[in-house]
Image (cartoon, rainbow, N blue to C red; front, side):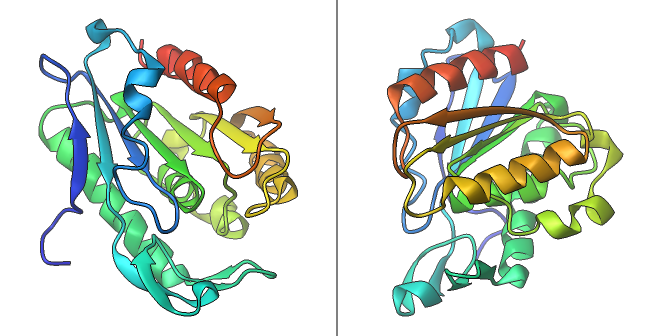
Length: 222
């Protein structure tokens, strides 16, 4: 990294932001990927929400023949879902710095939502459940947690009751729904409040899901 913070696409409200949503893209995409979802969510201007869409670092991805692309971590083997855990921790640290940039500017941590799609969702779950200050919620779309096995030892009390929305496609060929369900069940086993939504789609986002995200965000940001 050449700077302290990841480069980000930011969509700011017309007045001083009172809430923030830090939204992480999936493998091979960038911060612009979910930029169009902001007007589709139709959140009221009175909430004054800042959306932050960071760009993941460029790195070689083993399962894509070592091609360099934006990725939060390397996937070493798709069949076993083996990932580069050091990169997971590095990306989590970069997301933590974005959270702390918001709190340093005066925003309370419990007004910040972490959101992510696919790889981004994995980093959102990893970071949010281990963060030392209370956050508003975690939005985990079409994802699972490759670090769920160490969560019991690493989780923080501050986010033991954090609201989590997980949504997944029933026909997802990239991350099978069973992988997401396994993460969901492990989280519930650790007494996390998980709201689960499944949709007849593949590795994507659908209109019904956007409506559910809107409702969930309104509950979190009021």
